[in-house]
Length: 143
Image (cartoon, rainbow, N blue to C red; front, top):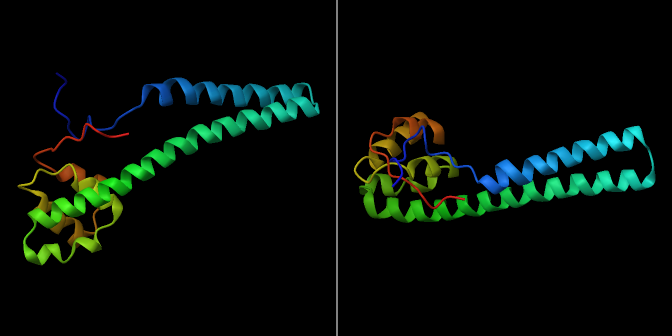
């Protein structure tokens, strides 16, 4: 069993994406650009274009996954907040930004109302919300 998740340990790296694919694609793009400069030709230019296209594709796939995850978090947290908050705060759920909802998802049920009040009153970022959480609610299903 792993250690409990905290603000300091909640970031997640996807080993295949972050440590293998992206570095390989970055090196390949750099090498093909160097090759084009050193040995200019239509073929070398096309290989460089393809290398950068594959790098862009890998980045785009990651960004799409994060965007879908944020949409899901937005829905999940709005439902959670609607079931936990007092009436005065329920009406203010639409005022929360996606980043604030992402930050609030780590707050335990008992303190989520307090964190939401602070977020709205002080216009806190998602990171600022996470730093104020006393009882961390881990999220192990992130992309």
